[in-house]
Image (cartoon, rainbow, N blue to C red; front, side, top):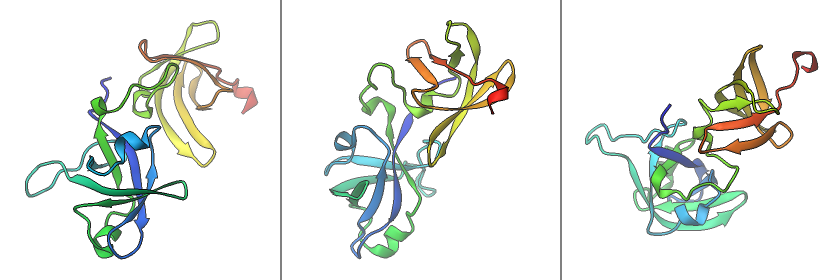
Amino acid sequence: MTAPDHVIVGRIRRAHGVRGEMAVELITDEPDAIFAPGLRVFAGSEHGVPARDPATGAHVTLHITGVRPFQDGALVTFAEITDRTVAQRWHGRYLVVPFEELPLPEEGAVYLHELAGMTVLDAEGRPAGTIRGYYQLPQGIVLEIDSPGGPRDVPFNEAFVRDIDRAARAMVVLIPDESQD
């Protein structure tokens, strides 16, 4: 499985004010490297695929003109969005950047888009399945694992995920017994 060309870095939550400012949920560990005046992001899907302008076929580009902290995210202004009416149309849209523009994750970490297709190993290092995908719950991310015992959902946290080898595309996961469900 190949990695996508773009990575989700934010999600527009709502319009804020009358001049096109928007509340953005930051979905990156490096917000200052991505959301800064003079930089650009692209509109994208929930899968990290950049949106294209139907008229030109070009990526829908947003140039950042201002950023300030707000609650658990940021208030962001874009050159292309100058009033509340236009900003309201962007509610729920994702923001993406090219993967190669992001810094590499720290040791033992991965980007979420890299999870699908990773090999799952048991505590002894034996193959125990493959990650099919993941989904988000209010409590955190849950891995969908195809294991020899059938599909399993396992929380993506330190209690279950013991080691991640990004280069080998493998992680050690403690998969609970069916009797513990």
